[in-house]
Structure formats: structure tokens, C-alpha cells
Length: 208
Length: 208
Image (cartoon, rainbow over all chains, first blue to last red; front, side, top):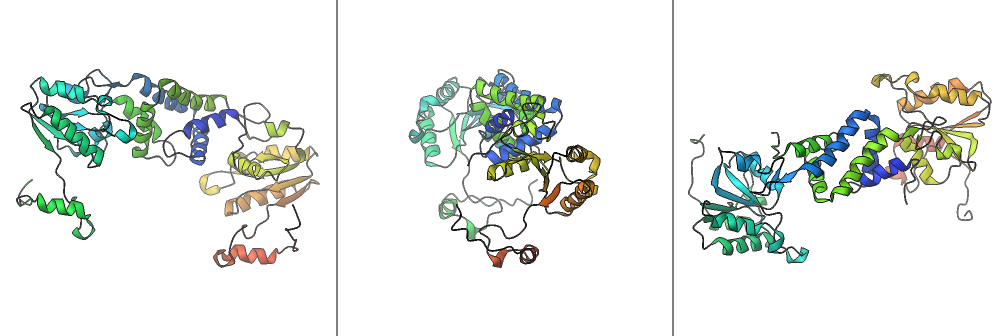
């Protein structure tokens, strides 16, 4: 049954909130009523932050990451190794890798993976711009950091074929048991691959 | 650890979203990235709906319900029985009762319940305005529809003492087993009260 609202303004705000991912009518109402209790300035600030985000944010012309400037902070940083390019699906993956603080190269955001089921072909992604970057000759290593799904693997293979005649090394993220995993609960495919791709033992206690 | 954002605009929008109730940084980021994929007009519409809600919505001067006009639709409707006043805590309670389609009277939104722990006294609620309404002599019944908590009971009692010398009848919502409840899982207090307040059996099959 449809909720009856005593105010069109409230109904409108609730319907806008409920368009957000994972937000139903009840949560949307809770949010709208919450905002009604805040002072007018902070609600205006909220609304404007959202409008401004959509109208002013840019995509870095080098790596297609979200940025406030034409070239993002990572691409314009002299401290990063511009010869290593990590290829990721989305902006969120850049954040995840940045958060590890283990990577000093630059990124290339594809904007998705090749998925014929969803109607996404190579032309919908930024693969051509990646090819141009590699063709320019300044890239020494391409790290493919896509999801281990069928679509991710297809995209990996497509990119590999496009860049294999250039001198750059193509690598991929290590696959295996997650840190903290117990053997008993690891899935068979992961466990199987981690036996095949076993690596030399390193005593991590001596390392910093 | 703090998330690193490549864009201040994004960081700003995420921090605004995460001020909403029940929204953490991860969900806030998901919402912001979702909006980035929508077209600019619909994001502007979202932002403006929120700002407009806060700046333009009014509280009905009769019942303190949310309204787009000075007097809300319910209070200004000639089809409602203005002599029955249902006293509720919040705007949301009005919606819940309206949704049942079983009530034809009007409402009075208190704005909360008396709760010394949270520093809410009778003066912070709209009890005085309720008293004035009852004193005017047009009210024949007051239905107390507050939560069955300590605070709700206190507020019920406070209101009862304020209005008992007026001719209006004071009633409260029926308490008992919920429709569809099984005895086995009902809590003791509710079950106990439903025995004490047992009511004459009515054959509901014959009723429409």
C-alpha cells in the first residue's frame, strides 16, 4: 500500500531519497525527517554538496579517475612512478589500492569490464586511451587489477592482446589465500591455484 | 584508517551523506558514486528537493503536523470529525495511523514525549496548545496514542491530569496480542494485560 504524506514537499524528498541505491521508502522517510530536524544552513550545505559534486567533478584526462582538476593528484604527482600503470575497473578500486599504501605507480580506470550480457564492449571502456599511453613508450609495466570474474578475465585477455607487441611487461595481482584465511574455509579454486602458484617461503618476521 | 579521496568534491559529498542516520562512509561513497552516474538535471532535482523540504515545509498551526500550508489537509478537511483528537508523538505516527484508513478524527502531534533523561519537559512539547484546544470545548474525545514506554506512560498521565476537568472523554489505544500473533511467542506483560482486558467475543466472519 502506498504511504500517504501530509506534505507534497516531504513526498517529493522521500521519492528522491528512495532513488538512491539500497534505500527504500521507509529509510528515505527517516532521512527526510532527520533533515527536517537539522538547521536550514546545514541542509542547504548538504543539497549543494551533492549538486556541486555532479556539476563540477572532472575525470582526469590521463587516468580517468575522479578529480577536481584536469589531471588528477596522482597523475600530476612527481613522487609517483609514471612507468607503472595499474589497470582497474572503477574509481573505487583506485581508492582501495591507495588505501593499502603499497603502490607508488599510476592508475588507469577502465570504467567497467567487457560484458556482452550488459551490452558493454571494448569501445565503451577507456582501453583505446590505455593503448595510446602504452604506445607512447613510457610505460614499462602494466598491472591488470580487474575482478576475477569471467568478464574480468575476458577484459584482461583483450587488453593483453592489444598491448603484447609493446615492450611493457604485463602482470596481474597475486591470487591465493587471503591473509588470515584458514585452509578449511578457503574455496577449492582459490586453494588449488594457491598450490599451483606456490611461492618461495620468506621469513616475514625479519622484514619490517 | 581514513579513506583517501582523489577529489575534494567527492570527499565533501561523502561526508555530507554520512551525516544521515544509519549511513556510514562506505554507503555514503556508494551513494555519491551513484549520483555521479545520473544525469545532471536529476541530481540537481535531488539536491533542490532536499533544500526546499527544509526551507518551505510548515507545521500545521492546529495539529503541528507537517504541511505545505498553514493548516494541514487533515485539519482543513470538512470530512473529518474535529471533535475527536488523537494525540501522537511524531509526524510519522500520523502517517502510520492514516495508513490504517480506520481513523476519521484529527490529530495533535506532541513532538516527542516527556523524558527527563533526554532533558525533554512538558514545555518542550505542544501540550499547552492541546490544552487550549480542549478548553475551547469543541473536543469530545482525546485518544492518547503514545508509545507504551515509561516516557509514554508519564506523558499520558501528565496530559490526563491537564485535561481531566474538561468534559472530553480520554481514551487510549487497545493493548493486547497483535493480529497474527501466537500465544507461545507473546511477551508475558502483553499476554497478562490481554487477559485482564479481555473483550466480548465478536464473530468477525459476519462482519465486512
